Amino acid sequence: MLTIARRCVPFTPYDRDLASAVVALVSAAGVFLPEHEPFPTEDPGDITYRLIPGSTEASSLRIAHHHYDHGEADADPNIVFPIDTLRELAGEGFIGGVNDNNFSYGFTTRLRELYETTFPEIADKVERSKAKLVLLTAGCPETCHRSIANLAREIEARGIPTLIISASPAATESVRPPRAMTWDGTAIGRVVGRAGDRAFHRKVVRAALEMFTHDTPPGRVVTKQIR
Image (cartoon, rainbow, N blue to C red; front, side, top):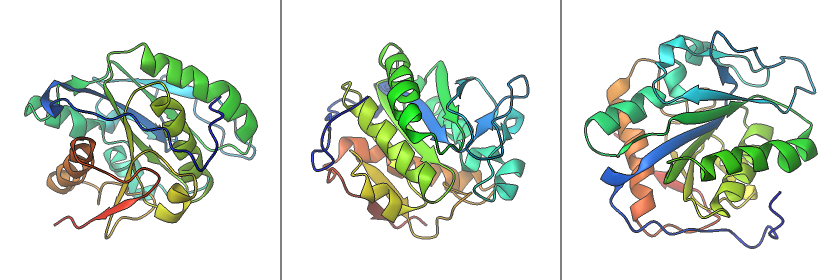
């Protein structure tokens, strides 16, 4: 588990072309595949996670999470777990590809176990993968957004640049993540836009990925205007 003091922000610069970068997606939105065991939907939850292959179509994903309204995301899981969007951007040559394995976990109040056991394991697997960048999202407005920021810090400390697309910027910023972005109009349960609006989803995810190549303030959440 990362033990850096909160006032210190782990930060790994990225000085390469996005077109050569394999991107991993990591989320606390509770997504899983039909063949997986669903996440528990009663407190305290659990500390398990699910592997989501990079070839997964968002339409095949399911969501089990009892601390945010995922009704719209049930119809289009891409709005909380934008794997279709990443694959489209890879097809356009904007990024190099989507990581073979991506990661999802659900809600839990067993935070010490999550931070000490699950997060180092996920970070180890990301570190050993082809991923050069990691994009992160979350479900519920408080616990999930704070936990995913802690996971971003854990991964960043391994030397892999991370960025959170946040729908709860105050909770995200309280943990001082390496990089984070929000946009005017975002909401819990639709991190990258409304269900079905694929063109807008691309704008949000592109804006997030472009932050890897720009100077960004560590420990802060940057607000973007996206039209």
